[in-house]
Structures are given as structure tokens and as C-alpha cells.
Length: 133
Image (cartoon, rainbow, N blue to C red; front, side, top):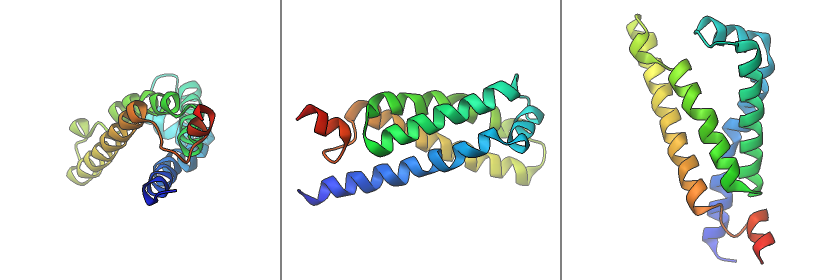
């Protein structure tokens, strides 16, 4: 198997890791409270739901199992989280505004990655590729 297949696998694993690891925090009262304080409506319901979406999308991309759907789940997760939780334009403290802007841009780049996966798939070392053979 060519080297690029392993690069794609490593890229998927590194990309999926943030969604998988961060998803567990979405079930904590601290994270739900933080989101409620940030103005997220129905935070007690939507934050855990976003954790399920991030976990499902992350695992899907990691394994390359229905990864195009998983990538769309990650995009579905990223758009509202980016706009609601990292709205740097509404933050008064300049240091916090700068930090939220960095987080906003990080999420935009991850959204770009999700869109690329949704269109091009995950490569030959994936369950999707094995299923197609």
C-alpha cells in the first residue's frame, strides 16, 4: 500500500481526535452551565446532543465508516457551536475577544476539513473503502 494511504489514515485520526475527546465534556454540568451562560438556549438538552453528534461524527471519520455522513455531522456540530460559543465580536474584554477569535478561526478550519471529507471521503485505509471493494 502506498505511503499516501497511511498519511490519510493519520490525518483522519488526528482530525477526529478533537471531536471524540471533547465530546465527553458535553455531558458535564460545568460545560452545560458555561453554554447556558453564553446564551445557548436549552443548553441542558442541546449541549449533550451536540456531544452525541460530535462523537458520532468523529468516530465515523476516524474509522472511515460512512465518513461522508460523519463529516456532515461534524459540520452540523461546528456551525452553531462556532457562532454561539465563539462570537468574539460580542466580547468586551480585548484579551477574551482575541482568544474567542482564535477559537472561531480554529473551528472554521475544522469546518473546512469536514467539508473536504464530505466530498472526497477518507482514503483507502477505511471501512468505506473496504466495503466498496
